[in-house]
Length: 457
Image 1 (tube, rainbow, N blue to C red):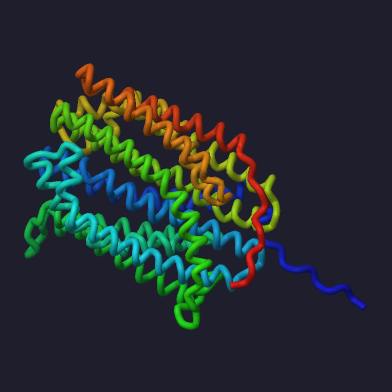
Image 2: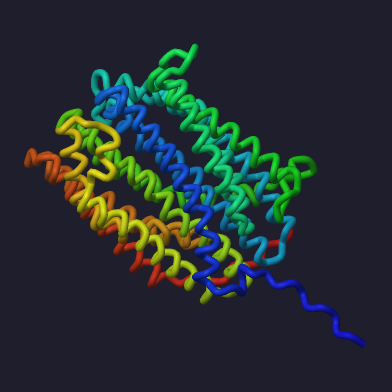
């Protein structure tokens, strides 16, 4: 009698690590390039509105980044980790139930974000040092941008679900389409076109809101139509507190790191704001690039999540660690190359947004100090995603705490000494170096253990 056929092999558990990681990361990188173009266009539009608008965007930026890091990096990484672990253990029912619970959490989180920002944005931007026209511009942008928070949370959640299955192409294609749509709509509403009046900062923010809403609708349809490895089944799925608890516990631990990152950036923004609107605008141009480089590091970190999650779900811990280190190396190489180029020739980036000599000087000084340390920063960011996949986020939280304490303590000393803006930018570089080095050491000495196999959903 013929032997029964062997069970199908999951290529994510057997394929060579580096080629597989690059294959999964390339669509993410292309999508991030699309997002980069959208951000460049948006910043260029804001530059046409004047220095107060650029300074106002520097005030809004940390909170926009926090929302993206919460929804895409922290909760998104936790969702992808748990879904991929369930798939690696062969438990498709649990994976599909996790998707429904994740969407419920995303809706609540998005509505809560909108309510908080509409209520407290004036006070928050004031605490960051916003005054006069820059504060007014920041509030005008935020009051429209954060109306679309639910769309941002849902789009990043749905993207995380697809990435957990190893499908990087579809969410990346949608993000490119969202970026292109955002560019077009932000230009039309922000600067005016034809019969549409020039709405300024609120119009630029409106482009983002509409683009994310459209992307959410398309990804939701894709999963609901059964075109992915798992299906979105809204009907027939009962609410299970245990699944929600698993998502929230891992997501809450992962969210500690973005809070520290944005806390660090808010301290730095406050410090720079003391040097005047030109320094703040230059700092905003510099950190705008970081907003683009963080997703590039995330491209490899996100690619590592399904590989690590499935490997741990299947008990292959050595392979999981190999994936994490490979992703960190690639992210460090990518960000480090960009940082070194801009440290030498910052005009490649800064000249696209303003011609104000004082603003350009501040932005150039920022890159001279921070650029050489982007490699360590990129490696740390990638290891953050890998640690989420392994459910070992504690080390990354400690690394973020170290950076926050260095910036807070150093910032207090600089204020007492009435230090110039370049000293604050040097402090940025020290924080990046400390974060990356601590992340590498803590992952090196933190054991990753095989996951317990949960009961079917």
